[in-house]
Amino acid sequence: MNNVITGKVSNQTKWSFGLGGFGKDFGLVLVNIFIMIYYTDVAGLSPIFLAGMFLLARVWDTINDPILGYIVAKTNTRWGKYKPWILVGNVLNAVFLVGIFAAHLFEGNAQLWWVVFTYVGWGMTYTMLDAPFWSLVPKITLNKDEREGLMPYPRVFATAASYTVQGVAVYAVMFLGAGDDGRGYMLFAVCAGVLAIISALITCKWVEESFEEDEAASKNFNLKQAFSLILKNKQFLWLLAIALCYNVGTALMGGYTLYFYTYVLGDATKLAVASACGGIAGVGTLLFFKPIVKAVGRQALFSASLVFPVIAAVSLWFAGNYAPESNLLIGLSGVFGGISGAVYWLIILIMVADTVDYGDKTIGIRAESVSYSAHTLISKCSGALTGSLIGLGLAAINFVPNEVQTAEALTGLQFLYLSPAVLCALGFFIYSKFYKLNGENLDKLQDDLRAKYA
Image (spheres, one colour):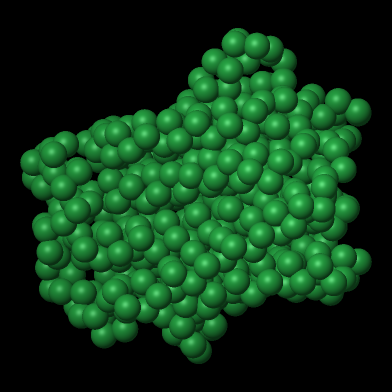
């Protein structure tokens, strides 16, 4: 392995890697935010059935994802270890994405089997593209300052994709569907799939990798080590705990968001106000990430990202109860949520790279794809858990799709939206108490790697 601790990352790599994040996350956000309301209100599926399906899909992922990470880690081609998986994964994921939003074309048992097949397939192919994509980070550079300069690019584009979906999806579905929401969702999914493939081609063509891993270490790396690696890396375990808290908390709030706007505020189009404010705040934060992180430090900035969802949730809850027409409160909710999401997803992925370095030092194996696939698994498990909880929550409050809700149901929706913020606070506690790869500890790790690969 070459010494790339001090190597500079080219602008070509930064922009190409950034554009890869746009298409990759465009479809992800579409699924995370709109899948439940599509399944219940358009495809007519039972929330109880969906809760069970989401849970079973994630049980399968706990087996599949680490194995896929191991297979990726053992891959050697003329195009490198990760780029072939990024391209093939995006193509297959695009197919399954369109399939997910074609569920309304089926009925009865055929519909149920189709939903299970497409959702599980989408989850598997998303790991196939996502873990290799982020595994490029420690292959591009080992320098922590260069990583902090690289990561805003994919996060800016991914954040732009997120708020583009949130801001235009409702209108795009109406326009493309021309009165048929099912057709609108399906055609919008086609657009998302095309964007994903184009962005993957850009990443694979122009991202430059700085070094290759020690072939001897890679050859001796086996499947048992792929699983044990996760358990032996204590800092990675704490990182996964933080990720689980944040992902479940924000995903629950995100899953209930459109229900909140539609039934509590009474106007689904107001989501565009929050999305616009969040997008501007989030992208602005990412554009000025380097001076901000130099001024306040990575630790303080990440801590803020864990606390801001609480403020965002309280702002929207206050609007729902006391000022449903207040664009100020709705925009404020969007701003805090936007900054939180932008900062969290940028820094957490740098932190995964840091724990890869920590594993290199303490265990002697890097295995980027295993670490990133495990992190992707946590994200997907969070999505499945929240999908199950959302379905059960809607059933518990006697929610009736496409109808005027009872006062009790509206109160229940507000509670369901607000309460997950507690999980973000728990994530902040874990980070403050147990995660150690900050400040002097991280500098010491960099010094050790510099000595090892000099």
